[in-house]
Structures are given as C-alpha cells and as structure tokens.
Amino acid sequence: MTEHSGRTANILLIEDDQEDQWATKRAFSKGRLRNTLYIVDNGAEALDFLYNRGNYEDKSKYPRPDIILLDLNLPVLDGRAVLTEIKESDALRALPVIVLTTSTQEEDILRSYNLGVNSYISKPVDFEKFISIIQELSHYWLELVVLPPSHHS
Image (tube, rainbow, N blue to C red; front, side, top):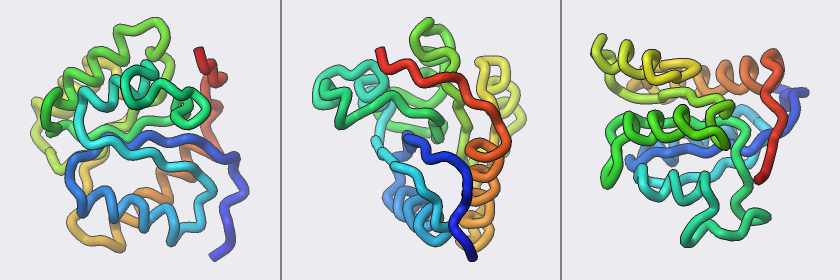
C-alpha cells in the first residue's frame, strides 16, 4: 500500500472508549495516513480543545482541527450536545463533523443530521472493516473534498 497523496490534516477524535481510540490510531497508522490525530475522551474536554481553554490553551500544541470524528455516547457532555455547540458557534460551525458511533438508531441518525453533522457512520465491530472505513473517510475528506480554510482564531 502506498502513502496517500492527499494533504495532511489535524483530526480531533472525540471518543471515550479506549479500544476505539486504539483502533482509530491503528487504522491511521496501517493506512499510512499522514495526519495528526488528537484524542479527547469526553464532550467537555472536546469543547475545551476546540476553544483552546483550560489544559488546551496553547494553540500551537492544540490547533483547530480540520475534521472532527465524534462519538455520540460520551461522558460529562454527550456527543449530541457537543455537535449542537459546534454547529451553533460562529467560530466552529464550518468544521466538518463526522459522527462515528456504534448507534444505528434512526432517532440518533436523524437528530445528528438535523443538528448539522456532515456524515454519520456506524462503526463496524470487525477491525479490518473499521480500518477500511477510516481509510475511505480519509480519502474522501482529505483528497476529494475541499475543506474550509483553517482559521486558528
């Protein structure tokens, strides 16, 4: 497999499950994807990262991500609340948000799209299928799609 020719990107994974964090890191590594993956494990921490607050004040260490991978079922502040905050914020609204979750409930899918999510993907249980999905996501979002300009305000 050759390295993807697409641009590099800062990706924020908002995921509380350690195994899913590991699988996502492994998928990026196995796919030879040239991206920087930042991981936070709850919704409140995600908003701190996005607004450069608290432990994430240093914008050079914690830059505005180009893409957000968001789990819905998070501790402290759930993914639906994080998505609502992102899409209601003038500073964050243009960031592409991809829900990456185990939920296949119609209510979650419909609500996520109504809140402004860019894509909704149900995580497969099979690791090889998960790697394939991460690689396809990267190809689509980092090679085909024109992303909004990064404004690190």
